[in-house]
Image (cartoon, rainbow, N blue to C red; front, side, top):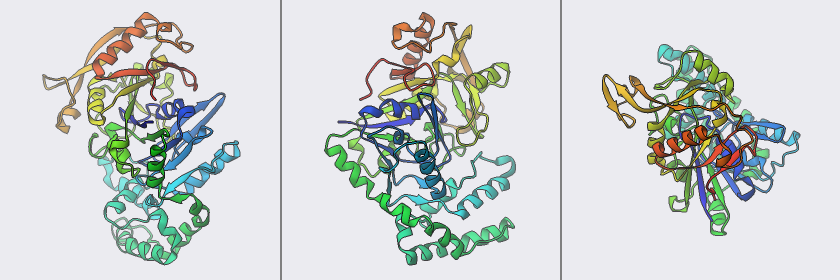
Length: 427
């Protein structure tokens, strides 16, 4: 049975949680392999709406085993607040497992994130201020705190001491902020140790055994391809590997165990934070698209930047991730447009680029070459087969499929769990 990777194709917020939820009744394990609580999934189950920030969305599906992999950075306060909130609504959260190698976000990570972003002034990246970047920086600098460290106070204290030697110098001498003490950080983390310990294990071994047993494992990526630290619009990116390759490194499962890569793409494009966005709309159409699609961050509440579908980005993501199937979400949001524009290429100083320019400066100055498709006015929210869609909506989907370099297997036509058209099975 397959290991299935789910990744965002654009700049995040494409509806990855819904895709994971769609696989729920045939999925045995769902693994979050990157990121932290700087991004969110919104999943609608019946009349209930769930906003998840740190937990894998598979936790909402009965019978699914949720896992937080080693590639995730974990804010323990957020983790237990989310678990308690779900438990209060009757969701079973007892199966959650957390990698012993997952790194922990501390108080000083959050503080540094906020003051560093302010210090950048006009060069701000658009971080959420939740300590994600500084926690990953400590991981790479080999001064991070891992989940397993909380169970040996002596080791924990040594690691915090090592991290604070530099952090306090920065906070006090560069940012004019109060330093913090080792006791303060250690005491804050140890509050969670007893509750965390039963959840922590060698999750890579656990997942490998599950795949050996023929169980379906879904690897759920946070953020998206264009926010990947290597392959995204650097430096306006996240701090982790949000592409399919990150599923292997962020979970401890070998890449040969991954059988299918499902890319999630909106029928238009959005992003949050700073950075280039060729199809961005600044007019009334942009306001209409944002309001109709309710494009506000699940985690931050920030209004998202909005624009038309970008075919070169989808082709790029298909290549970088090895995408086998696309899930096209929010097609219903475009209902009512007389014409639906699609970016088919870029113009950079009079030169046409059919693919994403390798030079970031070119991409920053790119303007979209648009092709317009006839729109539709019919309500498509009850469509459950491709043939149920109006002819113009069908043509739009088929055109995107041809431009994107891989098949569109699922189409989202509404926010509900069942508001989908399945053209090809994902399992």
